[in-house]
Length: 116
Length: 116
DNA sequence: TTATATCAGTTTGTTATGTCAAGCATTTGA
DNA sequence: TCAAATGCTTGACATAACAAACTGATATAA
Image (tube, rainbow over all chains, first blue to last red; front, top):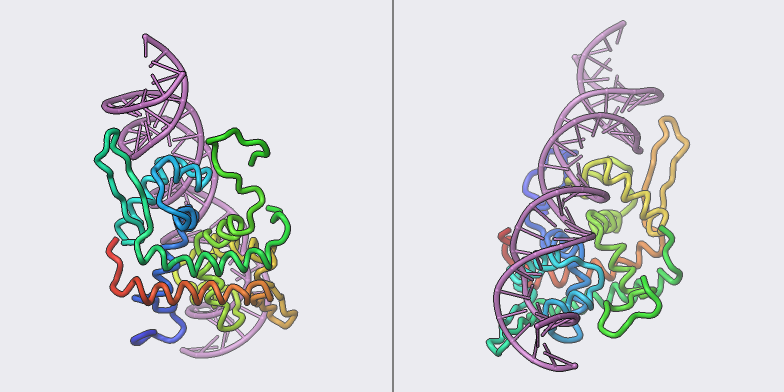
């Protein structure tokens, strides 16, 4: 993991793939977006509804970043009216394993509405 | 959120375990904390160093919430000086599957430092 | 015996992040 | 002609996370 860390100093996370992956997935709405796209590509508003509760500003920003990271792809269909559609790339599809792991965990360990 | 949703309105996520699980895990530092505790229980500062970069106020808050959710357990050892230690509960340990899935994904799809 | 360090946090004030409400341009369908 | 849907953008605002300092206890080093 590290090169030379002086004793008790903080852990070296440069460049640890897990650490980075967590940083990508931990942003608000990201996992919801991916999960929504796992059952098919969607337009902006459609995605927005599927995700549930994310405001368009945040959604647009998130979707742009995920596109940049190669997790989702955006296609503008030049029909009339032009339609956008968002879909998962291969990297995005691969996140299904993560969602499924979360799913299994949730079903097992979050049985009742989690009091906040 | 709602009970009777009219047609095209947003998806009903009350109460979907996956949705809730994502909401729990998506908070900043949560996955980092869990990952750090997977290789053994730690004290507050030790955990802080292992997590890397989380400020103590946020860490304290997160750790309290995770304790509340039954994911980690806090023990105060009544030695002199008293020491705290944080460990994963069974539910917390079970999240190893999620971390591993993220790990595999990260290694496969985040090969180079992700330009931001 | 002061000085320094560690532990487990809390407090303070600032900045980053996300949210809300609204609006815009386009294009159908009624 | 009008309302409604699509795919966003804008600006004001609230909340979350930040760094930095600090508490108060104990322990170790000079």
